[in-house]
Length: 346
Image (cartoon, rainbow, N blue to C red; front, side, top):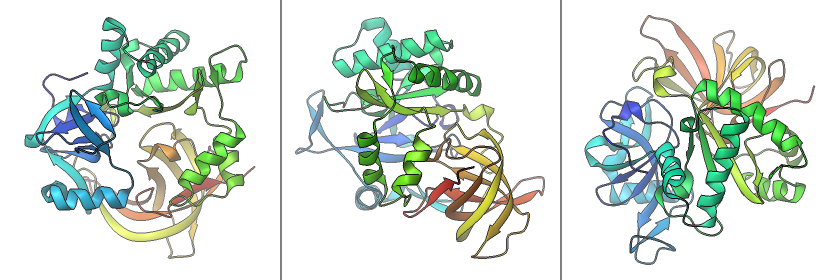
């Protein structure tokens, strides 16, 4: 479960970190400052917490507003004005990181020592099924979420992560084949489950139920394994990304709503996801050919559109400034309540 020597550049989305104060943060993204980890508070020690680990009780933190309030009150030094993105981020100083939790090490530990509860058993069985059916190396798979840090409950969902572009592109069609067969332990979410999921997210991601059902129907990263809900996240390794911290830099330009055509969906599978777009128009401001991509750091927007489709999206415009002088504009979706991305039926 716990890694050995690490640096901020060697960890990625799906990992978790524990601070010296015992708070648990989930790592976001794959590019981090050299002396910090971009991560968001998930569990904090609390005497009245509903979860327990090693004799210590923890409370799960829900909602961005509560999360930001707690960090501001207890660890204001974790609110970081990032010069590379021009945004205020939650970023834990590396000196305050006591433990790094690696999803692959957690899964390997279960394979070696055996699971201790039903969720661990299901997570191990799901990963073994994917590794054999894809096929991919078992070492490319990991267990994340509450089970990564040993704070799962009997109601917890399965959260898996697939690391590496090659492994992700092998597992994705495998999942689709398994979901489309009747004699497998996997199934797609039923309409009533999708309606409940829509109700959970519609307050901060305003998609109509009709659009939500249509878009979810063609995804594979969410479903049920042996009747336990699962979410699979696909993540590239930091060293495989074209970005490096500080190159490019990003300058926020304000909110915008755009309409565009998807030119490439090659990286739509991953978190963060990326859509190359063209024929962009906006009622907010003239953009011309300068806006070339839509990105999101939320798994919710992965595979939300396909090549050739028209999309409408609301997010934050950012100017992208590369060290070689090249510039462009992108739209980042999912950083603010009310952001959305939807494609139109062909």
